[in-house]
Image (cartoon, rainbow, N blue to C red; front, side, top):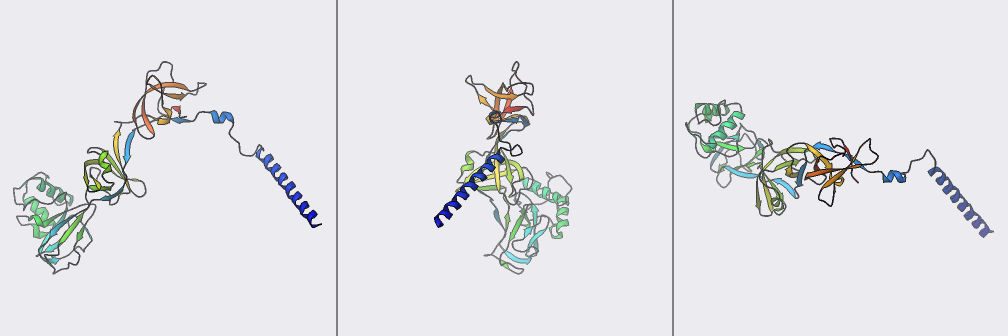
Length: 344
């Protein structure tokens, strides 16, 4: 009796499975269900539009990216008489960083410091740097390439009266970055005698250090464009590569142009080449080479029963797109921005 009951239960389960399967088959074939691609759908060409844009061929820089910050000594003797900026704090251009022996050391946005003590009539690149920095603070109205004049000392006096006298000591000015330089004065307080302990400034360098064993130096070159990206993937800075050097196991890319450099860089790409302006561009997969050395794309026209081949000259390519120039093809469909072409 028990065996008969078990067999009956199994039979019932089997019948239920068949019924369930039948229902599933019927529902799959129901007109209201999802439509499956037909053979003609699968055979239809996949298309993409021709675009008009600047074609850029770039190389993503591999390796961790950090700024090659530079630490410069600004005071190594005398007694600290005032510390308006704390150790590790950011220095503001136009403000005093520290007083030593009662004299200020003024922070100014400059690429490099003064070469010598400056007096009336002096001129040169360091004077031009000083004038440009003073103009940024709104204190100097004169031309940057002018020699040192009373106007120069008047501008300095507006920032700190103790700098009004001629000459201006070279040590009285420290170059800093507008994007953030910090004071290094660990363990130093007002009254500290400098000697073994020194005061430094850590500057943001304009050189991007790539920990890549020098690999970037094989494709990056002076004059190329470069784009820096933040952690959000957005463009943080665009400019150019001014110089490329290798140091130990890293590549140093000195950058120029583009304004203030970002504090942090998540990734970067060097522009190897690009078109002079917007051009017609097609996906690489849409361009087919022929035995005679020419290349063609298949144009989809609304009034044509099938795609037509159009001969094109291929220019600059990147991983995805190529610049194309249609030849004067008799009877071929024209190609312009938005024209649909077959990609496979």
